[in-house]
Length: 382
Image (cartoon, rainbow, N blue to C red; front, side):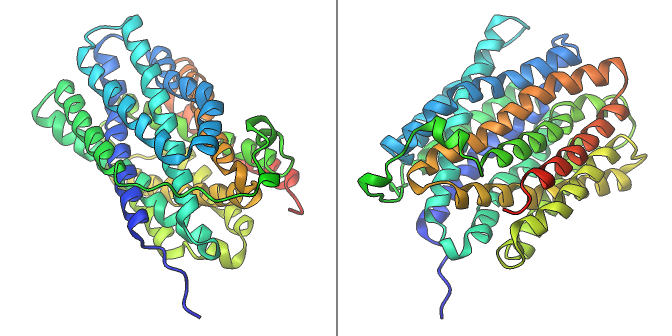
């Protein structure tokens, strides 16, 4: 029997739209350096970093319901317009103050719509028989920019300014919006008796609650390197944003493309456990690395763990959610990432300021270890 196709026109267009949007977003991994230039300390940086996630978290219920009621395409297009506006407004920031907080909130709303919209669209178009593999392959569109964003940012800041970085982010956001106009609606057709029960029902569905927990743990832990690696590297004499995130994303892409079939065949939770172990070890090792080689290796460990954990959790959410509530469920899943950043930003900012960066990264690894054990017991038997 011929296997269902993954590579379709809808897949390619949504992949391209996600890639361009994520590349624009990941240029802002350099944003803490800009805040440092403006006089922000680690706690302020953590707050501003998490503010985007907090705004995204607040609008997730509306985003989820809108996708199930109106469709995925309108949410993606509206999010694309808001994203262009948000990244353009960074060009007007020259000091710390209320204006930069407002822009971070708008950016969070836009990212909420795009992140949830594109990944729900992908869940609709990948074949059910190859769901984990399809999600893993599609997730490369969001993972590759984690490498290219810092590298592109390193290059831009090598010859230009943060203003140039923000301007290029605008161009990428506009390109993503242009590609999105080519998408056709693809949400599943459901009968009247299968209509959505609403965002709250999906949030409280018993077999989904453990996934919200482990997703929050995952996102909280990775908030450490994503928010504070830039400022950590300003204190040491090795490594770079490009080196770490290139190793991170290439390792993630390698396991997704090379082993993306494994969760479908071996069982997703059997692959999830070792993935969390790799992630925890990588996070704890960031502050212990003493040179470029070990710094790249811990980046690769983090990427391998992230590379399998995210599509597995995403696939489990899709499998357990009712089709009529898929938009709400995936919006909730993406919301746990915002919740994790909202928790992790200020938490790890305080640890790095008051205790130290090494202890902060080790704490992030410990969060993964403890959270993984709790999840294993809680979700046992499912």
